[in-house]
Image 1 (cartoon, rainbow over the protein chains, first blue to last red):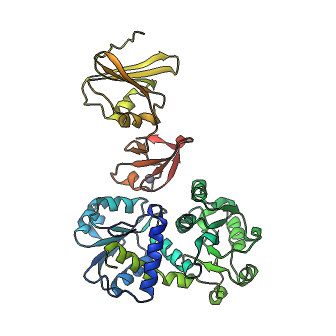
Image 2: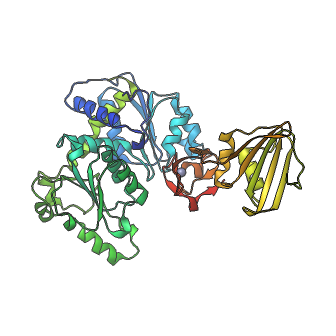
Length: 304
Length: 148
Ligand SMILES: [Zn+2]
């Protein structure tokens, strides 16, 4: 199952075989098997909406393997300022490079770009919709600890309503029929159609209000931030945020093998003391962004 | 044979049982504005619908894929294909797999709500009807469907 020439827009376009291919090749890249495989390639990073973290990760990934990187961040691109349509910008930039990485605040923008571009497009975030390379790096990180995703038990905690990271990763895991717990306050439950989608793919999904309701051991706790803006009442926010805070004590109560993940940046939903525990794998997760993005670039460009 | 107040056609397509006042919308969706002679009847009495509209399109035989596009506004419509004054085919409307350029995306942050991009929705569930935007991936239910 080849990714060559394919645009990477949404996890919903992926078959399990695609996910496995990226995980396998990212492992090879991380071990140093492939060198300089992006030499002679020009990659555009078009960040219509700024995201320094994601842009640096892509640019560093591309440059380490020998690619030239061109692009812009924010509204400093004069044509966009002058009101050029997204379609026109993409058609123009297509002529300057071998691949486009883009982030845009409108949902569906990357899909549309992939339909008008003459080169592959990688979606680095389209509003609240998708950010597929984040999902790939999450899966890759999980695979470093767990071989078999089908017997895996994963709990997602926090804002499951708006968190696109959670939506995409849960979807990807459902292709393996992973057991999934969704832990959130009522206000921030995962949209029902997404839950139905996970079930239709074969995952067992349970929705609960707090961690204590899980009576059996599980493997991964994926934590997301609960944003203050989601609550009308600040006291309600304080109460909820406090009860979802991950401390050393919480982790100890979950058993010594539990792994804690987080898409970062974190604010205060995970205590800083947790960082030094073996259970905390969120910084590893962030660093895996490099080999995973390199693997995706190489596979899409057909140079690996 | 019932006599219609709209004259009979010899060759073409008759779309019957359109909900009253939706005939113009049907013409719009099917892109029939410049397709020759159309006869439009609005507000006929109907046993099935109370009131109904009828459209007769001369010398044009609409394919099933075309007429299925009106399923969202005229799910009970019947299609009659007339050749040489005879009823050659009678069929019902079915839901298509996809609606292109027909449904508005309810998401204001969707690319189709901002740029000139033709909307595309996949039918992901038939009963109850659920559509997924090909672009922003939002799922909308029948009550939220808005025709462009
Ligand atoms: Zn949409």
